[in-house]
Amino acid sequence: MQIRIAATLLLAAACAAQQPQRDFDFPAADGARLKATYYSPGKPGPGILLLHQCNMNRQSWNALATALAERGVHVLTFDYRGYGDTLASGGRQNLEPDIDSAMVTLAAQPGVDKNRLAAGGASCGVNNAVQLARRSGQVKALLLLSGPTSTDGLKYLEAHPALPIFAAASSEEGLAVSSLTAVVASSKNPASLMRVLDRAGHGAPMFDAAPALLPAVLDWVVKVLS
Image 1 (cartoon, rainbow, N blue to C red):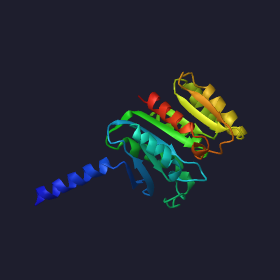
Image 2: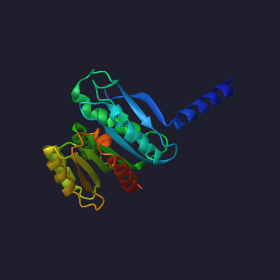
Image 3: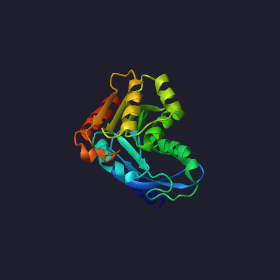
Protein backbone atom coordinates (compact mmCIF):
# COMPACT_ATOMS: atom_id res chain seq x y z
CA MET A 1 0.00 0.00 0.00
CA GLN A 2 2.79 2.43 0.93
CA ILE A 3 4.62 1.59 -2.30
CA ARG A 4 1.46 2.33 -4.29
CA ILE A 5 0.99 5.71 -2.55
CA ALA A 6 4.64 6.64 -3.12
CA ALA A 7 4.36 5.75 -6.80
CA THR A 8 1.20 7.85 -7.12
CA LEU A 9 2.90 10.83 -5.50
CA LEU A 10 5.92 10.50 -7.79
CA LEU A 11 3.65 10.32 -10.84
CA ALA A 12 1.73 13.41 -9.69
CA ALA A 13 4.97 15.30 -9.16
CA ALA A 14 6.24 14.30 -12.59
CA CYS A 15 3.00 15.41 -14.23
CA ALA A 16 3.12 18.75 -12.40
CA ALA A 17 6.69 19.33 -13.54
CA GLN A 18 5.64 18.72 -17.16
CA GLN A 19 2.78 21.24 -17.11
CA PRO A 20 3.73 24.10 -19.44
CA GLN A 21 1.88 26.67 -17.30
CA ARG A 22 0.99 26.34 -13.63
CA ASP A 23 -0.63 28.75 -11.17
CA PHE A 24 0.43 28.36 -7.55
CA ASP A 25 1.40 30.41 -4.53
CA PHE A 26 4.69 30.68 -2.65
CA PRO A 27 5.57 32.02 0.80
CA ALA A 28 6.97 35.49 1.39
CA ALA A 29 9.50 36.12 4.16
CA ASP A 30 6.73 37.19 6.56
CA GLY A 31 4.54 34.17 5.78
CA ALA A 32 2.17 35.87 3.32
CA ARG A 33 1.19 33.84 0.26
CA LEU A 34 2.06 35.36 -3.11
CA LYS A 35 0.19 34.23 -6.22
CA ALA A 36 2.38 33.24 -9.15
CA THR A 37 2.44 31.56 -12.53
CA TYR A 38 5.29 29.31 -13.61
CA TYR A 39 5.89 28.61 -17.29
CA SER A 40 7.96 25.48 -17.89
CA PRO A 41 9.76 24.58 -21.12
CA GLY A 42 9.74 20.94 -20.00
CA LYS A 43 13.54 20.65 -20.10
CA PRO A 44 16.57 22.14 -18.30
CA GLY A 45 17.43 25.71 -19.19
CA PRO A 46 17.84 29.30 -18.03
CA GLY A 47 15.22 31.24 -16.07
CA ILE A 48 13.76 34.73 -15.99
CA LEU A 49 11.63 36.50 -13.38
CA LEU A 50 9.22 39.04 -14.91
CA LEU A 51 8.02 41.93 -12.70
CA HIS A 52 4.79 43.60 -13.73
CA GLN A 53 4.05 47.30 -14.00
CA CYS A 54 2.07 48.98 -11.24
CA ASN A 55 -1.14 49.47 -13.24
CA MET A 56 -1.35 45.78 -14.25
CA ASN A 57 -0.67 42.33 -12.80
CA ARG A 58 1.22 39.17 -13.66
CA GLN A 59 -1.19 38.31 -16.48
CA SER A 60 0.29 41.18 -18.50
CA TRP A 61 3.33 38.96 -19.17
CA ASN A 62 1.39 35.93 -20.40
CA ALA A 63 2.22 36.25 -24.12
CA LEU A 64 5.93 36.85 -23.55
CA ALA A 65 6.21 34.20 -20.83
CA THR A 66 4.49 31.56 -22.97
CA ALA A 67 6.73 32.35 -25.93
CA LEU A 68 9.88 32.27 -23.79
CA ALA A 69 8.95 28.85 -22.41
CA GLU A 70 8.50 27.61 -25.96
CA ARG A 71 12.08 28.75 -26.61
CA GLY A 72 13.47 26.83 -23.64
CA VAL A 73 13.37 29.47 -20.88
CA HIS A 74 11.79 28.88 -17.47
CA VAL A 75 9.62 31.88 -16.49
CA LEU A 76 8.06 33.02 -13.24
CA THR A 77 5.60 35.87 -12.82
CA PHE A 78 3.84 36.90 -9.60
CA ASP A 79 1.36 39.48 -8.33
CA TYR A 80 2.68 42.14 -5.97
CA ARG A 81 0.64 42.56 -2.77
CA GLY A 82 -2.68 44.16 -3.56
CA TYR A 83 -2.49 43.28 -7.26
CA GLY A 84 -4.19 40.50 -9.18
CA ASP A 85 -4.72 37.47 -6.96
CA THR A 86 -2.35 38.43 -4.12
CA LEU A 87 -3.89 39.95 -1.00
CA ALA A 88 -2.73 43.37 0.15
CA SER A 89 -1.70 42.23 3.65
CA GLY A 90 1.69 43.49 4.77
CA GLY A 91 1.95 46.54 2.57
CA ARG A 92 4.41 47.83 0.02
CA GLN A 93 7.31 47.72 2.49
CA ASN A 94 7.53 44.02 1.68
CA LEU A 95 8.02 44.49 -2.06
CA GLU A 96 11.78 43.96 -2.13
CA PRO A 97 11.78 40.82 0.06
CA ASP A 98 8.81 39.53 -1.93
CA ILE A 99 10.78 39.92 -5.15
CA ASP A 100 13.76 38.20 -3.55
CA SER A 101 11.50 35.31 -2.52
CA ALA A 102 10.19 35.09 -6.08
CA MET A 103 13.73 34.78 -7.43
CA VAL A 104 14.46 32.00 -4.93
CA THR A 105 11.24 30.27 -6.01
CA LEU A 106 12.20 30.48 -9.69
CA ALA A 107 15.68 29.11 -9.02
CA ALA A 108 14.16 26.19 -7.10
CA GLN A 109 12.03 24.95 -10.00
CA PRO A 110 13.18 21.64 -11.53
CA GLY A 111 15.56 22.15 -14.43
CA VAL A 112 16.32 25.84 -13.84
CA ASP A 113 20.00 26.66 -14.35
CA LYS A 114 20.84 28.85 -11.34
CA ASN A 115 23.84 30.26 -13.18
CA ARG A 116 21.67 31.62 -16.00
CA LEU A 117 19.02 33.79 -14.38
CA ALA A 118 17.60 37.04 -15.77
CA ALA A 119 15.08 39.63 -14.62
CA GLY A 120 12.62 41.72 -16.57
CA GLY A 121 10.39 44.61 -15.58
CA ALA A 122 7.91 47.06 -17.07
CA SER A 123 7.34 50.63 -15.82
CA CYS A 124 7.81 50.47 -12.02
CA GLY A 125 9.08 46.94 -12.64
CA VAL A 126 12.18 48.40 -14.30
CA ASN A 127 13.62 49.70 -11.04
CA ASN A 128 12.38 46.57 -9.26
CA ALA A 129 14.39 44.42 -11.69
CA VAL A 130 17.52 46.58 -11.43
CA GLN A 131 17.35 46.59 -7.63
CA LEU A 132 16.95 42.80 -7.64
CA ALA A 133 20.12 42.56 -9.71
CA ARG A 134 21.92 44.85 -7.25
CA ARG A 135 20.77 42.92 -4.18
CA SER A 136 21.17 39.37 -5.42
CA GLY A 137 24.22 39.38 -7.68
CA GLN A 138 22.52 36.51 -9.54
CA VAL A 139 21.01 38.37 -12.48
CA LYS A 140 22.90 37.77 -15.72
CA ALA A 141 20.70 39.89 -18.02
CA LEU A 142 18.02 42.60 -17.76
CA LEU A 143 14.91 43.21 -19.88
CA LEU A 144 13.57 46.71 -19.17
CA LEU A 145 10.43 48.29 -20.66
CA SER A 146 9.10 51.84 -20.26
CA GLY A 147 10.55 52.88 -16.94
CA PRO A 148 13.40 54.60 -15.11
CA THR A 149 15.71 53.31 -12.44
CA SER A 150 16.93 55.15 -9.37
CA THR A 151 20.31 56.81 -8.89
CA ASP A 152 21.69 53.84 -6.96
CA GLY A 153 20.32 51.53 -9.64
CA LEU A 154 22.18 53.41 -12.35
CA LYS A 155 25.35 53.43 -10.22
CA TYR A 156 25.08 49.66 -9.87
CA LEU A 157 24.77 49.25 -13.64
CA GLU A 158 27.70 51.57 -14.28
CA ALA A 159 29.78 49.45 -11.89
CA HIS A 160 28.77 46.27 -13.77
CA PRO A 161 29.22 47.21 -17.44
CA ALA A 162 29.36 43.58 -18.60
CA LEU A 163 25.68 43.03 -17.80
CA PRO A 164 23.64 42.76 -21.04
CA ILE A 165 20.54 44.97 -21.15
CA PHE A 166 17.60 45.06 -23.56
CA ALA A 167 15.57 48.25 -23.13
CA ALA A 168 12.53 49.53 -24.99
CA ALA A 169 10.20 52.49 -24.65
CA SER A 170 7.65 54.27 -26.80
CA SER A 171 8.51 57.53 -28.54
CA GLU A 172 6.01 59.55 -26.48
CA GLU A 173 7.54 58.38 -23.18
CA GLY A 174 10.10 61.11 -22.67
CA LEU A 175 11.33 60.13 -19.21
CA ALA A 176 11.47 56.43 -20.00
CA VAL A 177 13.33 57.04 -23.26
CA SER A 178 15.97 59.27 -21.67
CA SER A 179 16.38 57.08 -18.59
CA LEU A 180 16.65 53.82 -20.48
CA THR A 181 19.03 55.37 -23.00
CA ALA A 182 21.33 56.22 -20.08
CA VAL A 183 20.89 52.71 -18.67
CA VAL A 184 21.91 51.05 -21.93
CA ALA A 185 24.80 53.50 -22.34
CA SER A 186 26.13 52.29 -18.98
CA SER A 187 26.59 48.80 -20.41
CA LYS A 188 29.66 47.87 -22.41
CA ASN A 189 28.24 44.51 -23.36
CA PRO A 190 27.94 44.32 -27.17
CA ALA A 191 24.58 42.54 -26.80
CA SER A 192 22.98 45.55 -25.04
CA LEU A 193 20.53 47.55 -27.10
CA MET A 194 17.89 50.26 -26.87
CA ARG A 195 14.67 50.26 -28.92
CA VAL A 196 12.50 53.37 -29.25
CA LEU A 197 9.14 52.32 -30.68
CA ASP A 198 6.73 54.59 -32.53
CA ARG A 199 3.75 55.45 -30.30
CA ALA A 200 3.48 51.92 -28.96
CA GLY A 201 2.02 52.62 -25.52
CA HIS A 202 3.49 51.89 -22.12
CA GLY A 203 5.15 48.75 -20.80
CA ALA A 204 3.95 45.24 -21.62
CA PRO A 205 1.13 46.42 -23.96
CA MET A 206 3.89 47.49 -26.38
CA PHE A 207 4.07 43.84 -27.45
CA ASP A 208 0.60 44.20 -28.99
CA ALA A 209 1.21 47.62 -30.53
CA ALA A 210 4.62 46.75 -31.99
CA PRO A 211 4.55 43.11 -33.18
CA ALA A 212 8.27 43.08 -34.00
CA LEU A 213 9.14 43.61 -30.33
CA LEU A 214 8.20 40.12 -29.13
CA PRO A 215 10.44 38.13 -31.52
CA ALA A 216 13.28 40.61 -30.90
CA VAL A 217 13.03 40.06 -27.15
CA LEU A 218 12.78 36.29 -27.56
CA ASP A 219 15.90 36.11 -29.73
CA TRP A 220 17.80 38.41 -27.37
CA VAL A 221 16.93 36.54 -24.17
CA VAL A 222 17.80 33.17 -25.68
CA LYS A 223 21.07 34.55 -27.04
CA VAL A 224 22.35 36.20 -23.86
CA LEU A 225 21.35 33.28 -21.61
CA SER A 226 22.75 30.57 -23.89
